[in-house]
Length: 368
Ligand code: SF4
Ligand code: F3S
Picture 1 (cartoon, rainbow, N blue to C red):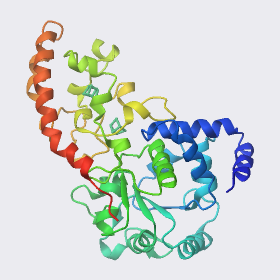
Picture 2 (picture 1 turned 90 degrees about the vertical axis):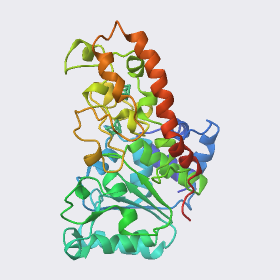
Picture 3 (picture 1 turned 30 degrees about the vertical axis):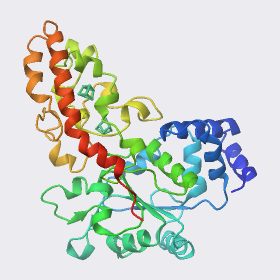
């Protein structure tokens, strides 16, 4: 679409050129790029040679699609992802049945090696694929064909990225992540979380359009711009954690004052995602911000490793604070100074424990 075409689309949706440029600037911020990158982002979106998107939905709850559609009013991101670029998305497209399948077939055949596949949901491999079929074809067959012909594949949400709830023991459907079900898939990026944040979906697509390459990834093939730091590192309650001020029961005074939720099961110290900075629902709020602990939904196998969700797990890998929080909690105000000192030691230990993984993150190279 040329700039004129885009402007007409913006107008049709009640959006201005200024809205579009603001969107480009906000994408640069999410991606950690300088604001000057906004003009390159705008040019990439307006480029008629922009790759199209194909969204596959398999064994899932539709939560990632809901996340994508979260806007209460049409935004520039909706316009770009849905109206302009998204060729196939069976849940939201107007076509249905064989008509919809024909769109997918045509898109894949005519754009080999050029489109981006986004996959939502895990891929069941048990019973010869009978647990999830679309148009009479097993999910695995469709994923192999569509992801196999894509320039890049984005596994959207924890089910697609890591198997998610369907793959939790005993995994009755033989559910696999995209990476495990279609090994060797080209340029795979995992955008985990339950669901994935629409801001990150949009930012990743925008990055790819602008840079024509994958962003730097961590050891789980997640983009560092969204998963490069722990929830705990940017949490607005972090000052309370450092001061040894914890919520001890739902609705207690500490909860009403916005104290740290670690003792109520918060997995923020062991979870990487940009929730505290990007937030959800168009920047309205995020789980910890509204008083609920982080459940660790962006981490592999969180249904197994982060449960019980409301129980404190002291033995999460790389998480060394467990041993000292209980004594601190016995007399919060009186021992805050002690807590700060002990915390300093624990932090050094924790960061040391994570050193190898963060180095690994920096070194991780995209698959070619
Ligand atoms: Fe925030 Fe949770 Fe860390 Fe407390 S434990 S500071 S609530 S992320
Ligand atoms: Fe998930 Fe924790 Fe963010 S539960 S949405 S990673 S705050």
